[in-house]
Amino acid sequence: MCIDENTFFEIWSRDLVADFGARKIQWNFTESPLIVGEKIFITPGGEEHNFVALNKNTGELLWSSPGKGSNSAYCSPKFIDGYSVPLIVTSTAEYIIAVNADTGELLWHFPRANRWGAHPNTPHYHNGMIFSTSGHGEGSVMLRLIDGGKAVEQVWHNTEKDNEWGGSVRIGNYIYGGGHTRPQWFCVDWNTGETKYSTREIGRSNVITADGMLYAYSSNGNMFLVEPSPDSLKVVSSFPIEMGSDIHISHPVIYDGTLYIRRGNALMAYKIR
Image (cartoon, rainbow, N blue to C red; front, side, top):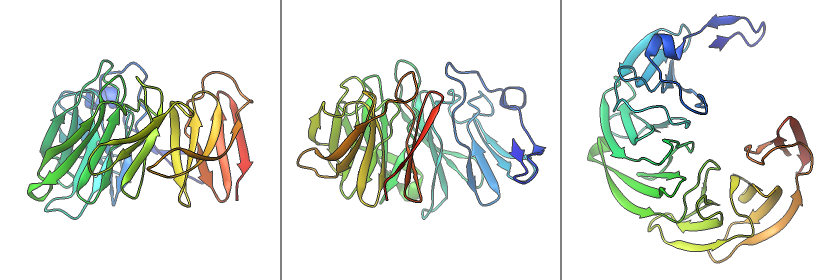
């Protein structure tokens, strides 16, 4: 839905199931819609309306793509420009897909499935390369855009770093983040897929970056400040998250010198400037 930020009145709304044939998925829809220009992109995951573009001001359907007819997979789409066509790239339950942002034409698809059809991590893009990581043993894959963005080829596949939901960060030529089947912290070479090192000190985690440093919220309940290095884990400091209840799974946020962490119904703010 679109809501007026001053009055909080609804301007328009669309029902993904009723309007686009979306199939309800186990952990419900968690995709963040993507706005580019006047369009808003979202993945209902329906057989006919698999991926759609709406007018952001009215909710009008601008185009619909059947994609590969695969369910929505909890991640959010990525916009890639600078090629012969503008691309929207996302993961569905069984594929990584790319569509033409102007027309909805399916440009290419790459098989990408796991036990639960869950791919919550949005693909990374850098310098012609697309990185995707997923849990349940599926691992991480690097694709290279070819033919002006209208096709891809696989560069490497690393089955060790299979991040389930915590995301990954690229700094320089290296990717940092946690694993799932192997609950460790990994550093992987962006260009080759080689695992530079792994360690259980941090384990499964959500990771973000600010000012050249890594902030990892581990599933063991600790927040780590890490200096990025391809040689070994360099923890600068850490502290436990003791408020709240339930599992440690939320993504941290940094804004204006403050680190925000949620656990269950507790929200904490830490001064880190």
